[in-house]
Image (tube, rainbow, N blue to C red; front, side, top):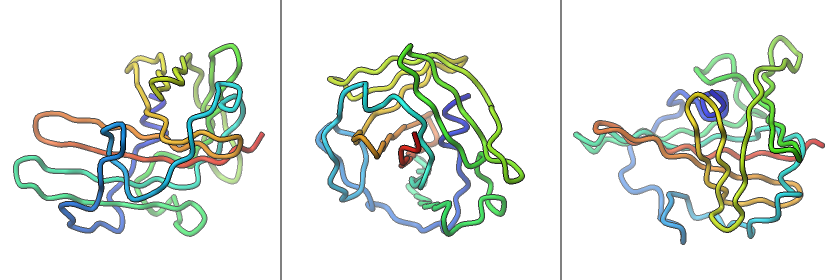
Length: 166
């Protein structure tokens, strides 16, 4: 549920591109960005607002790749098929909450539990879907996470960038 809110995206501004992304040190997909070291859990605690989502969907049978990049400052979120513009809150007691932006207001969406493993660079969310997010970067002001969802026909890659609000 949390990942649906965080990572759901339509393929807006799609481009066919077979090798747009490179592998980073951890073997995960990423662009050419240089990421900050992963910080302590204390830097994760707080309220984070999404600033960008990017990624791709790869059709494994045909090799076709559709890429997308969505920026809430320049894109009208209600005109693309994206889960609502979100904020996520990580609390020190390993619980969290998701908020969606609807009709000019931030509205509570859901509560969840999580664990953070600095060494594995992993946030594991306990939800009906038990989702894992790889932390590409965590500083006092920026959080960059990625997920890869895959089945026999498709591979979906999502990267979300957040700024700390509180």
